Image 1 (spheres, rainbow, N blue to C red):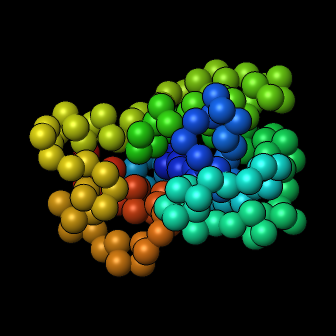
Image 2: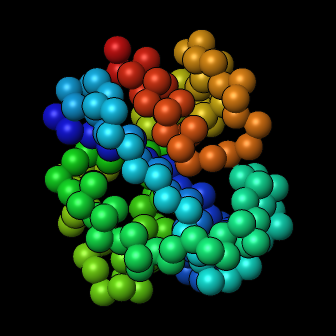
Length: 170
């Protein structure tokens, strides 16, 4: 089975208020083994980044000025996730942003492009009720080294989530 571990970083928390994707990363696994294929883009959101979001990921508007717009990477991204199961921590958040970006381009929603969406946050809450289940807490619980993670970053987060997912489903 082909899976894509996926994460995004955004300008804020609400796509319905015009917040946009500014970083997207995916890591391919085939039959629970990394294939070595990655996809990683920074995107110019054509808007300012909320201060609260910037504190989380450290990405600035100045850094994104010369990056491609989502429209410029959308087709390559869609091809990368096509027919794969997406593995996402807090999937409704990321899928909501992806669907908003796709809708802006008159493209189909995420669930029509990929085979399935698996939410590791939902899975973690079922496995560990009444405990913290953010990515840092899961790394600690499953003894996965996340010391390189000072800020959220889509590429590092997919690598950590891949290890967490494999540990949770061993």
